[in-house]
Image 1: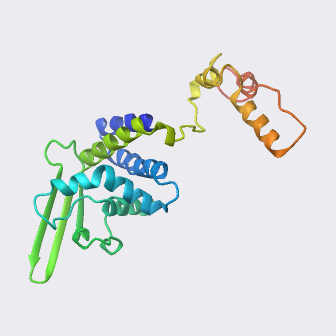
Image 2: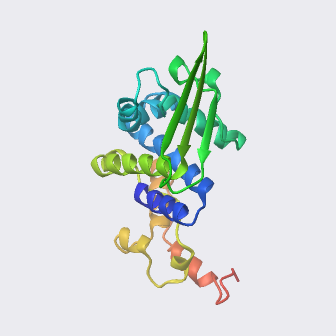
Image 3: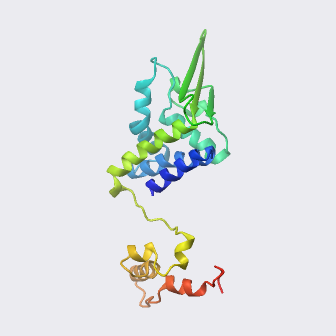
Length: 223
């Protein structure tokens, strides 16, 4: 599904659906992090995967030592505030690395042609003011490229089964699901497997997909 998500992110960016693209993008390190570090806590594996495949390169590319950059902690912090509060902001108290405890985070809604990232660090005596500005297209594309690169080399670690089908498939004589299961009924097969594991003697033989198609009228609603 990584390929599908990446394609949809690019479609969102092309159509200026900035926040839809951002939400899907911030999910990718969750998927890849779980595959790479299955025994770690969510935050730890998210940050570790991001830093390994994205953040460390950004750290090397910054102009000055000690300058803030888009680290795994910052992106994970953005993910949490965006998903749970609907806000595009960073809470510096949740960032352990002192150089990345930024005071202001600004997301630029653009295509990355004018600006990619920019940091402003001002030293006012013993007080540092850190400002980070990042273009949403640059952020999304950078994470997408890393996730796609990782997925292409670690497909065996990522389970692609998703309980989602296109509406059009329900009305076709044959669907990709049928082809993928060698012509058998995948829902019925799954039920039989579950019955076997539970030790039940009853068996499920009816083709669920065909039954569903028969129940659908021409208008697409259940009879």
